[in-house]
Length: 322
Image (cartoon, rainbow, N blue to C red; front, top):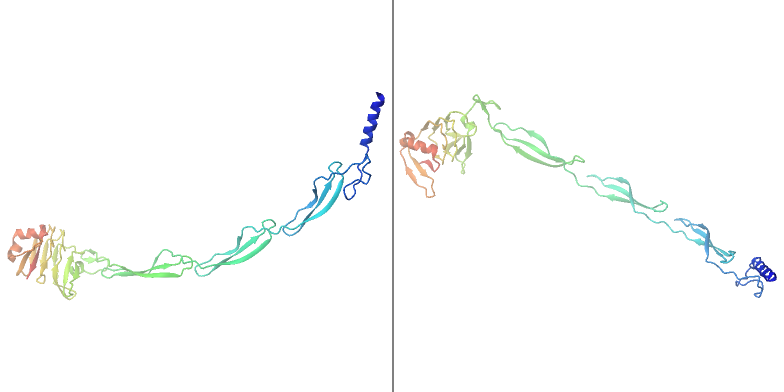
């Protein structure tokens, strides 16, 4: 039994101290294959050693090494070159930007760099066109203030808010302000009060006479209608010309007047006396859809309360003189 155990131990020691023999070029051991003290190398998968990574501008390299999968002895080592990967362009950015204006072009550099190393790969100048003028708020220039009977004017000017160049100029008319009577005089121009300057007149269509169309700035209690205005006769008092003029107590209509329009004195509740210089030829003109003319005596028109009341209360008739 002791002899058997001893034999086993000797065999194990012999195997443990047996080294792998070097392979020939064909992978076979230099020792004859019948020699039980050697074994055949089994190549493992190649591994990389001494690796240098390739960059955007330089090649890389590594050693491809094969070891024995059993005894880890190095069987081969081969250097391998890894070509440069080249630059990788990143998204282009703007540099050296000059903003355009309304009278000059702008520009910027469109620059592309490598995303890995930051090296500038491309620089291109881009021209941006002139932008439109930006109007500022309109301002008034060349202002001529209006006066009582004369219109004023001003220029409404638009300029560019960036460069200040004038874009447009429009003349605007400022209406006359009219007289403002205080104590018998206009407080603006100092002219003495006059009926002609206070009443509103409109030139007839044929341009031969004037029509009174409004009370204007008249403020007195006695209204004496003028027979002429600007060298032409005053022949008509227009429809509702003195409507609701309650402060007039006495009115005089000159002989030049040939027509009192509808409601010319309507609402003139303060009127106490109406004097018509020429009492002949007046007719009452009915203002209904089918108008009729009714001759009436001038004395009745002036002296009878009936017709007087019609002037103040009614608006469906006019007075017309032949």
